[in-house]
Image (cartoon, rainbow, N blue to C red):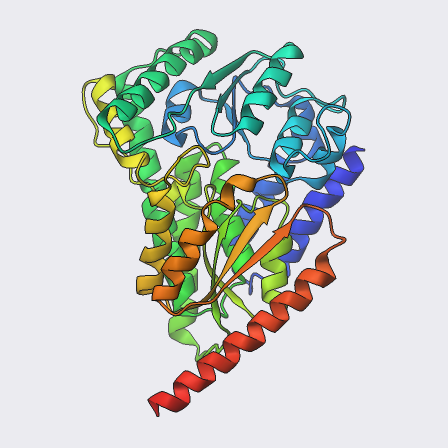
Length: 412
């Protein structure tokens, strides 16, 4: 069955590789992604720390281990591997994550400790299942509110407790010095990613949105962040030079903002459908895509001070399903509506992730203020509903195109 997983990974990379417009640096990112998910790597890799999900700070994971593996989900094939372990109505991300960790093809957890934030009921049940199968799991209890000093203290305390447990396992001394170094690397990642996205927006035809977001997501899977930053800087310069040297016809596709359930490599079904429907995916506001946007904490000589500052920064900007009120998600959407020419919003809900439906009325109310239509799409990692989704998106694209033409006529 490893052949099916390899085919799934290679198909996503091959499609992206056909659309990179000849930028040599793109090959480096695609090659690193392919190597990270190759059968040889999965069978031989022995990470000391596995982070399940996107709610645990990247910089903290980097400070606790020199060999961290992030498991986000995203694979249709690994969801099949968990059929006997999880009910079919479990959300695809949880099923895929379970398949990555519990299977008879490779064993990523043999030398690892697994860290996961309990940001939903699905995560709590998954933590119990993993422990029942002999995996050492450290569950980080995320408070349901973030807008009080007490909640931030609880968050910082939970991170400190988790760090001490992981440090004992990895035998790496957790100190303010290591955390400061990780914070510096995370800040370099954030700035490089921001420059790359802004360059891509200058000429929307220079690179497909699916490839752009795949390159940004690769930071989760490439261990050497400094090398990643260097290559992203080089790619950004190649794109800027191409934009300056050649005349590019104006792209009249409606700009789309996509939010809700995270889009995770290798499942690029929805971004590819948006492209095929004549829509330009300007940006994503989901918990995976927004993590690199969160500023790093100010460096300090005290671990407790750094963690408390991280709580102040992250808890108001994350889009975790754990929050009762998700102001970070609304703020991210509003920020993009303010400075991007967004014509419509696609709200993506994976089957089983009902927590994102609670946010939809607030998103619709905000979009109404900006006169931006919203469409809700519910799907999973299967391909059976592709044509149905395509019909709805093409109708949405046609409606947005007519609205934009009407606005031009009124302006003239």
